[in-house]
Image (tube, rainbow, N blue to C red; front, top):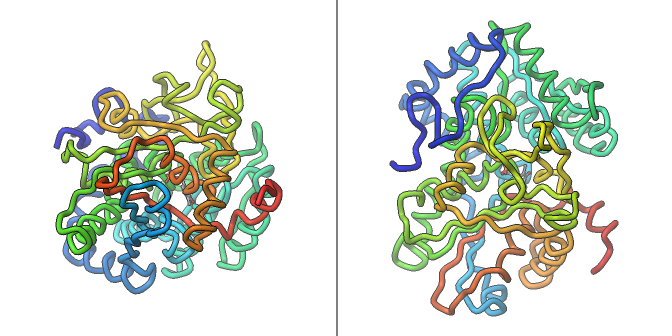
Length: 393
Ligand SMILES: *Cc1c(COP(=O)(O)O)cnc(C)c1O
C-alpha cells in the first residue's frame, strides 16, 4: 500500500505525533494497542453489529437518475446522510468508544466546533453508559444552540472554552488539557482524520467501511467495483478518507476532494487548505495548514461549519502532494446552489458540507459512460437556518 501510514505514523512527509511531553503516555498507550484491538474478531463483530443495527448500515448507494441526466454521466450517491444522527461521523465514534471500553476507560472527552461530532460522541456515550464531557468554544455554543441542547438531552456535559476566539481551536486546547490531567480513566475521541498518530489512521480505518460498501454495491449495480470518479468534501477529511480508502491503490479511479472556498480562494475568507496552505504543525501532526508568514494559524471561513477548519489530515496532505487526489474547491454560493439543485432534482436536502461535493459536478469533464460516486456525508436538517438565511430558492 503506497498510501498507507508507516510505522512512525507518517504518510510521506506528513503526520507524526507532535505533542507535549505530558500527553505522551496517553497517545503511546493508544498507539501500542489500537491495531491489535481493532483486529480482534470480537471487536470486529461488535463494531459491525452496531453499524448494522444501530447506525443503519450499509447505507444505500443510490442511482440519482435525474441528476445523472442533467450532468450526462452515471451518478451515484453514497447515502451517509441516512446514518443515525445524520452524518458519517457516527462510524468513527462507535469505533472509538468500543476501543475506549476495551482499554478500560470510563470517561470520554471530545472537542466540537459546529457540534456535529459532539452530538455523535454524546450519542455513543449514552449508548454505552459512559460519562461524556464535550468542550466547545463559547462563541460556537451561542451559534449552535440546538446541538448544545441535543448533547445535554443525551446526558453529556458541555463545557465552554473561554480562551482565544472561543471557537474550535480553543475547545481542542481545553480537551487536551483535560486529557493531560486525567490520563488513566479518560479517552479522547477526535472527530476527523487529524491529530497525532495514531488518530488519523484509526479514524480512517473506522470510516473505510464507506468505500468497502461502495465496492460491493457497485458490483451489483454495474458489474464491477470501480467507478471512474469518487467525489467527497474535505474539512478535516474523514468522510473523504473513508470514501477513498479502498480505492487508493486503484490508480484508474479518479479521486476528487472538494474544499470550501468560502467567499473565494483569494478573498481572505476561505477554508481551501490545499490551495492556500503550507506545511506546518496543527493539532499534533505535521500537515498542510493555512498560516501567516510567521506561522500563525489563519482563521478559516466557510458558510458550512463542518468545513471551517484551517488544515487537513496528514493523509490528505500526502494525497495532495503525490497528486493521487485532485483537490478542487467550491464557494459558499456554488455549494448553496448545488444544495438546492439536489433538493429539486432528487428530493434530498444535503448538509451544506456535502453540497460542496455536489458543486464539483460542474467542474469535472464528464462523459455519458462515466460512473461517478459522490459521498453524501450528511443531511441538511441541521442547516435549515443557513438555507433560510441564504434565501435564494
Ligand atoms: C463534520 C462534517 C464534515 C467534515 O468533516 P470531514 O472530517 O472532512 O468529513 C462533512 N460533512 C458533514 C455532514 C459533517 O458533519
